[in-house]
Length: 318
Ligand code: SER
Image (cartoon, rainbow, N blue to C red; front, top):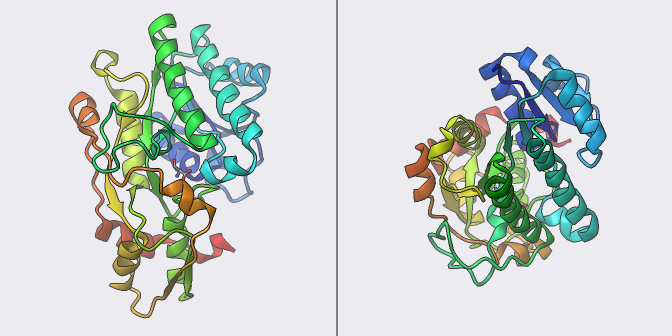
């Protein structure tokens, strides 16, 4: 059967690039971009099908699935860590009901396969911080982390009890030059490049030494496509896979940028997001993903810094 894809939350940082990659892979007529708001008229999302849709509206979701004969859903609509702390009840509602609406479509055999991202936010202050294992103590303290951990358990539940083919990775902070990130604790690592490119001083909302797991977008997209292509029988984790690429502190990223932007300056003014970050791992052990479906990242800090500075468009940040 031909693969027909729907990406929900297509206008976001990951969605925008995932839609382009999926259109390259499956052909643009086979990939529908869906989002709650219309894209700007020059958005790449409009190079193919686009549907306005709200993941909380199950009927609306079903209408789009039936209209295009969708087989695979990538569910990216969510409130991220910083934003969800500002609006806990809506964060919980969007992140959980959105997931149930999509899992139920798969349970009812309306779609065949689901991708849903989890996050390093599922871990908490009691988790081993370095080389965090696939299976470990998980006591998240943010609304976002709690919703992602609950979501992971539900994904596994739907797989075990209803045979739903749902696949997931725990994304670290994602760094990209396409669409801007929205509302995450790791967003500083994107914001910093806009300031560097504009030759302005960067004020960092995390501490100088706050090491976190990160990944360049191209690797994140690769991981996503690779996991979705894997044989179902090779997938031993139906909650969510640890995946890792880089770990760095704001200071290390600053130094890496300063290799290229010589007079770049930084100041540290940690805010509430520092408290969130301090409960997350510094580095992640991803040996299960490597073994099960051949995950390998390609970008190190130096390569990522170079590609970011070459491609970032300062106009995007406004
Ligand atoms: N980048 C996300 C956040 O900071 C982590 O999943 O919320």
